[in-house]
Length: 556
Image (tube, rainbow, N blue to C red; front, top):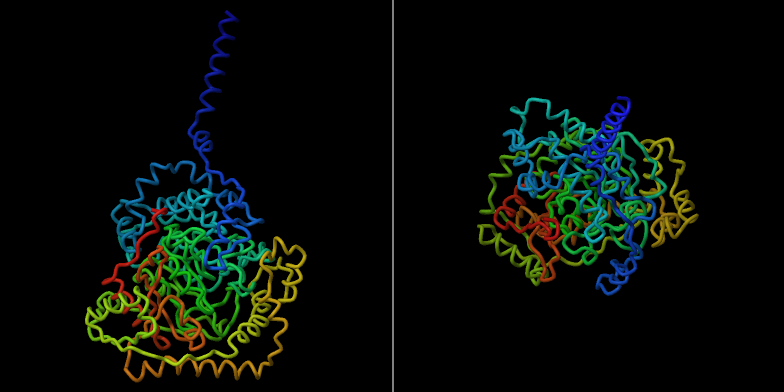
């Protein structure tokens, strides 16, 4: 009898043990995706044959950030989200704009939680694959799934389909967001756990979901000279999904451009001093807006220049860009340049056509077949075209603005917006810190930081330089805008970013096609200050007739 009891107990014990080993929890954990470092030598060697010397790389992956740690805190949330779930949601999410996603959610076809899980799964799927990873993400918000789940509890019937409510957005990692470090790509700021930037709070007030942080050019590309545009010590080398390790992904908002292009989020936020939104938006075939200085707050953003810096939205469509624009707005008393402006009219934007609109086109650029094709398309839609031959105009002292502004503005950020754990106080402190381990902290050198220290321009001299540059650059545009009563001047990519920067004029760039090699190019609209509503309307009208954007082939 005792033998039989013992036998039964052993059987039960064994059964229980076997059952425990096959629970869904353990099965899910066994299928977790792990990134494994690899030998980069062959990849690095291949870049030496590229025409663009800035793509001659010394490293691919970060030497201080283990990618697995990016999604580690979210693994348990992903344990029950399968490849089957991912593929089922693909048609509802991939390449969709905000209004389409919100409509699917209102109709019960999708939830905010599933939307977030889809992007997290996709990020891990691609970023853990050494043949496809873009090094585009530095951090993910550990609470984002929980936050999305809370949004799903609310009544969705009254949600504005043209709002950022519940929409997963990635921030460039020089924009403060509580719960994630703000590094600017620099090791010295790896533990910069700061409070929210003003625009971060604006997004949260509008109930957007912060998905995480994107890689960038270290110190917004005011760091090394002649180095890869998309490199940071924290995030490694950001890559272009249209030509991984072949085409530049642009800088300094390289990660923000790549994540939107590769559908790792609905939208991303970049920052620009001169070309840092326009360049990566163009290189990654997405829509990017560099607004008038002061339209968006810069408080809580790691700076280069308080004269020229601005954040801006990067999206797959013009209408999404306008939605993000409206979400950012708000006067910030902590930012001396901040102004209160009206929201853009979405109905006005979507009802605009090109009939009777007047555009200035650069005659020299008409040799570019994509630009010439875009201009022809616009003309055939009823617009008037004026061929311009502006005189080549230098921008003397431009570098000085960046040098002297950063020398003063970065210490102000550290004092007012960085976390207390950050020990460095000045540019000189950063230079010294990097010199302690140059191979890891500055493999391409830090020539631009060193240049800051050697610039002795006085405050009075700087004021004169700023006034002169503003006058020169505005004259460059206004001579033609005023003479022909133009609605906008059309450029390519970030070719006129420097002029727009010192003129403090807004610019929006829209995909206009791809070269024979498959590299994206964009048409850039430039107009006078505070003309964002008009620019977005013109960009929307062009986007509607051109429809040039296509998703990168290997990231479909």
